[in-house]
Length: 125
Image (cartoon, rainbow, N blue to C red):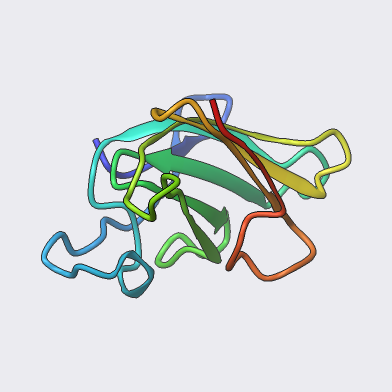
């Protein structure tokens, strides 16, 4: 399933994130994921923010109040610039770094305080 759902304690659905358009090639131009989700995590301090990763090679930040479109997107890439699937995601303890573990064995990190154009830190296997 390519749409994240948020439930409250009683099992009542609060939010369902929007599904992206699978026919658009540029992931940044779609509102949501186009392939099945692989992981998700809540921000350690910002209660309204969470992130999801998907087999469409993207990691997206969401706001609970606005499930109609992602806040930010990070694209995971291999050494030669091709797409790689992020299998897991995590925030640092202070919430300033976002890390994704990818299928090619790399760990890619972005700084939450900056634009998500390039990785801040990158470890390749």
